[in-house]
Image 1 (cartoon, rainbow, N blue to C red):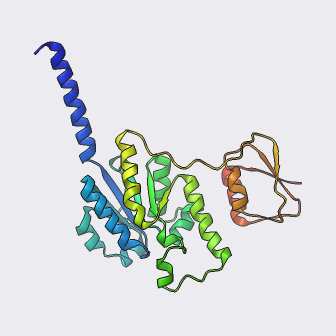
Image 2: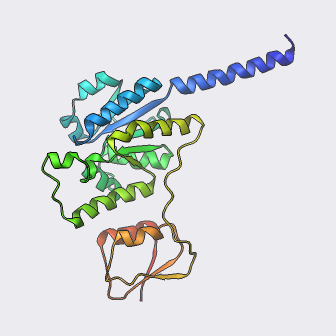
Image 3: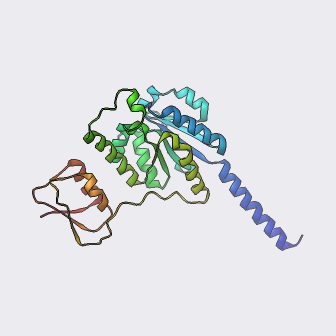
Length: 265
């Protein structure tokens, strides 16, 4: 064998070792906050992905999640490390290919959307995004449109309340969280792993923007909500609203957070 052939063989061997190492060392962090809607299906989907891709899955429980879910049973099922909010924190980001919220509750979704980082799971969600780590979240327990809500008698919310829940989820998506229904979890995780195997994180959904730069845009509404302002996040446009209009507290938070140029005129 010539020296050139030996060099080529060594390069191929190193590439194979790297690919195999990356494949077999993939690890997910599955997060369980304190809800039950969609949980069983999400667990089933996680099991499916783990078996198909030989994944290692660690578990993080919120304080309420630790009291609602069978921690020991889930730990035995997935075989990874177990973290419980208030007892041990997740600090080693590099070992995970993605963070997966198998159960994301209304409370956790609302806090994450408004960047209220008063629990480890919510703080971890935001920190993971800032770290460039893919974040997937099952929306069933945070979205009253899911089938499970009717089974527990919580399917009679008025449109304004339903809209508020949707706004929280839309904000999370705008931050880069990949939301899905429990029945879709395995498919979404596979897409994330496919992207990571190519050395890149899956691209978050694009931030809604107007195709304008600095020209003024007028909103002729008496009540300005986050829904009205979300399309202008990331835009340098000046948004003009009537002098007598009311801006909701959530919309005001959005203006401050993204430094939107909103002018009363």
